[in-house]
Length: 116
Image (cartoon, rainbow, N blue to C red; front, side, top):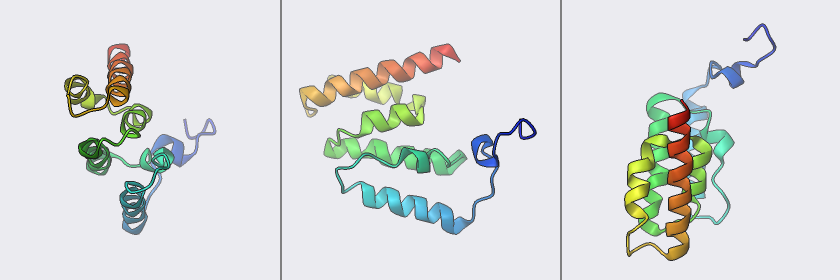
């Protein structure tokens, strides 16, 4: 695929220094206290344990009822979060609007699992 014109970044094989990864996590930590959407493009470059950690950090924002979380998880394709999202859809601690977003996200992510 590389010979076909795909970039190393698109294939997930580009080398990244530890400092670059640390910058991504620092940006994620900072974005948790803003209203702007999470930087999905940057987070999507993470792989393995780093990716899981980033997705977990986002999921934990549901403790603060962060309404950006469902959209971010769908964009990241974090299908492993479906059981938690489904459980939270009926949580009385979540607003009706957030419950709806969680339901939609759980359905979208579950659909990606059934397609694979």
